[in-house]
Image 1 (cartoon, rainbow, N blue to C red):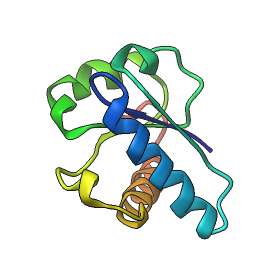
Image 2 (cartoon, rainbow, N blue to C red):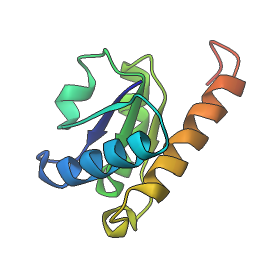
Image 3 (cartoon, rainbow, N blue to C red):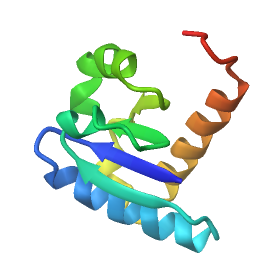
Image 4 (cartoon, rainbow, N blue to C red):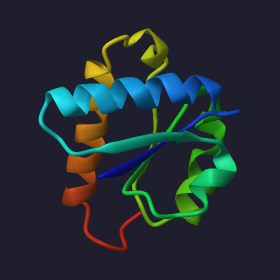
Length: 105
């Protein structure tokens, strides 16, 4: 599973991605979580895009530009020091995406 965590400049998303990777590893999941900027999201090659809360206004534009599921992280994501809540959030987005028929909005 390749996950891209996106913020404005890539700095705060680095911490979120590291914590998510660590929580996934502890859960026995082989996930790659990396950090990037909004432009990185358009490169593709990711199974899930997680946007920083401050990018909520760009959700639809990014969602329309990529094939993978895209979600805005909760406002308290930066206080999730062990990554467990972010992992639970990512798993819920992936589960919802599996339930959505292809081609549905």
